[in-house]
Amino acid sequence: MRTVYISLPTVEAVQKFVELISPLSGQFDLLSDEYILDAKSLMGIFKLDLTAPIKLQIEKATKETMQIIKRFIVEDPSVLHGHNTVMEDYV
Image (cartoon, rainbow, N blue to C red):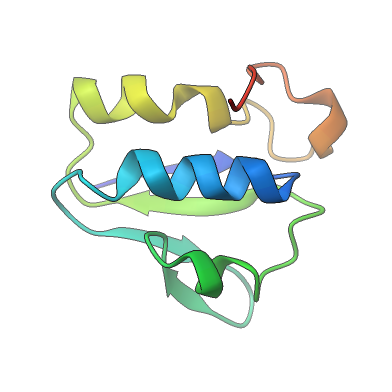
């Protein structure tokens, strides 16, 4: 199991993230103070505060999985969305 922080600042970013992880095996959970949600649930993600980085737990953090989600990973979780050091285009 591996835990990282991700940034999903736009509706498009959320959609792309779910699209990319949905076919992957293993459990992906988003954790907040109030919720533990399936990260493959588009509607569930919108329950979260998307203005701050979100903690993501990955059951099977393979090299392939990490490569696929690297564009969403925030190196420093205290950094706000607009200043994500690993951010790439979501499209």
